[in-house]
Length: 379
Image (tube, rainbow, N blue to C red; front, side, top):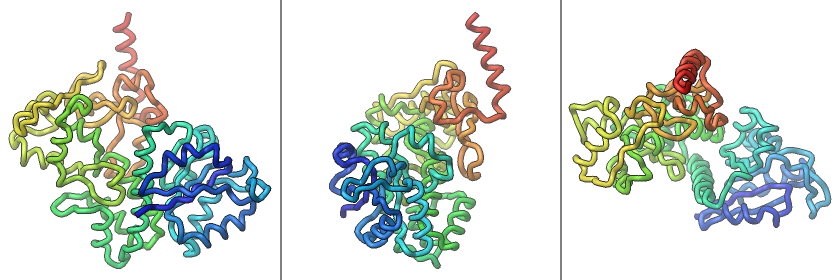
């Protein structure tokens, strides 16, 4: 099955043919259109053609270039159009569709706050996409479109079955009851699926907590993925608690609570996983599973421990919680979402700070002490 996305951008098609070609594949078809100069006509076009599309891709600024075929500029923005489409879906005048933002960094940074970003299921920064990134975005677009289509078969009166459909196989797994409660309330309220979709993707799949990604999994097992040819063999052993709910085709995740359970059951009843350093964890895994080609990861220069458990938001390297500074980016989340950390190295150098948005105010004094220590050390 091929999923059909309508891409609306005010630029002439020849200027963005490369982007369209990069995103298209056997399972993903992209149809291009300039925005209609008339707001009412554009809405009419989308309502009348809704059965032919599975999603919409929007540029942020639609009013800068002339629609050559119709001889005028649009008088509205992509964000305005996205808001109207969400409203129409609530009113049952338009089917609920995934909406993707595809725009330049400068446009996004100047024009959006978090409320505006929440209109979109996914944001793609046009000027930062490289050729190697296209397969990643293809999988994400397909996974999002697939979730919206599957959501049509959900029975809103059967909450347990809905949870099973959304979260996949969770039999015999311990799932945080607070997450299940919030998701159940969304189901019972019968909100449009885009609200539930945003919640699952933003608060469950894309934040470490009940689910962890491959970097977090490697950190907790102590393994350096790049240097370990046997990594795939190892994670295949963890397949029974890999997440297979909505969006799993594009976002590889594992149920975090099951990793220590798996360790106790299959690796070592006597040792607690978090109490071991990376080398100790890897040595045990190599011996138990005969995986000679696993290599332990090493700590960052200013860190004190290789008892890794989280991933530094600035460097994407594993760190022990004791070596981490809590970030502002991890504040005000749901209770099952883990605190975000940056390493001492990243905090001092402000590495990739846009990704972690600075430190929690509670860490200010501690950082000052660390800065004084390394200042004295350099003298």
